[in-house]
Image 1: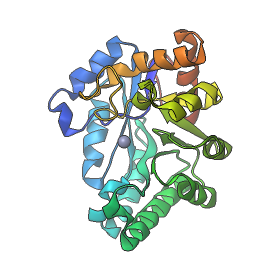
Image 2 (image 1 turned 90 degrees about the vertical axis):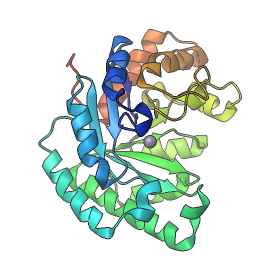
Image 3 (image 1 turned 180 degrees about the vertical axis):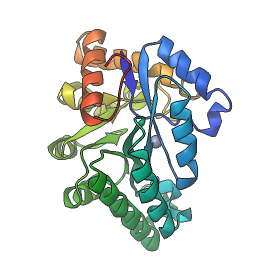
Length: 266
Ligand SMILES: [Zn+2]
């Protein structure tokens, strides 16, 4: 059994194939797909999509790339919608939230400040509702950690983790799991592969970030959630353990960090 802990199944790239992609993934053993929202305008979409597939759940959040267009009132709307979603068993986390200090436009001083403001306010929502967060961390490992230490959610996933061993330990120390996906499948990704090989197995969850971050055998094509088992097989090979062991451990890690998530087998 596999879990895709981060998949933008609602993305335009999937056109009208989102539901078909979910069943294709299920045929490959992907028992759950976590669909994070990226802005208030997509909250209803991800909730409806998760409800319309047997293996779907969702998160609500404002992604740093959408912060430039976000209004402060969106945070009020988000808090209200999160409160309402607490009754929805398919709602599992706050996300996708975080900080992006890679895209030049987002690095301008005023925009950095706005990103930090939105991130901290969303951390407060996660903390107040006892929810984990799904984080986008780009050139911002230490800053994200700093804010998480100040306003601590109920755990989280550092999605598409790409930092140092010290930073990985920092996330593990605040109760986070680290997300690994397509980037790990490239033989040139030495640091990511070293992390995936040496970090404690129980700190690792698998993800696709579909339609983005395609694994080597799909690149530059569109990524999809049915790729999780093959991504898991790469992790097994790197660690010289069985694919079965990776499936069991990564599923257990995902369940531990997303306690609201209910699998059919539970
Ligand atoms: Zn994402």
